[in-house]
Length: 194
Image (cartoon, rainbow, N blue to C red; front, side, top):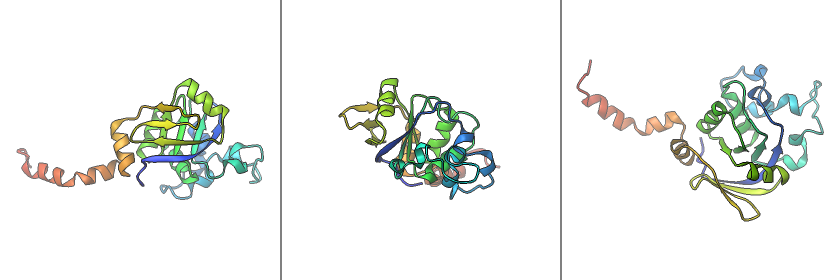
C-alpha cells in the first residue's frame, strides 16, 4: 500500500442510497485473488448496457467524473456482503476515498485495511457535497479533517490503528512485519517454550 496522508481531488457524486457490494463489483467478477484490473468491473452493471456499451447517463461515464478520486455516496454505502473485492475495485478504478452519512461497517473496515479511506460525515456536510459535485476538497488523514472550498473544515472519526496504517502505507501484515524483532524476542524469552 502507498502512504495516504492527504488526498486532494475533485468529487464525483453517486447519490443512490443502499449501494451494495454486489453493485460495486458483481459476484461474477470475483474469480481473481489479485486486485489488479478490478477497476474495469467497478459498478459494471450501472456503467454498461448488456451489449457492453457505456450508459451515457451514468455519472461515472461522464467526462466530468474522469480523474475524480473522491466518491460521494448515498446513505448506507457498501451494504451487503463482506467481499474485500469491493474496496479493491474502487481503488483500482482510481478512488482514494468514499464519503457518506452512513457506510456499512464491514465495508468500511475492509476499505480502511486496504488503503481506501471511508469517511462518515454529518447530514449537512453530506448534503453540501451532494449539492456541489465536482468540487475540489482536501482530506487530511493525520488531522482527520476535510477542507471544503467554502472554507469549512469538517472533522471525521477514524480508528487510530487504521489512521496509522494509512499514513504509513501499511496493511496489517506489514504492521506485524515491522514488529518482527519484538515478536522474535518475545518468542525467545517466553517461559512456556515447547
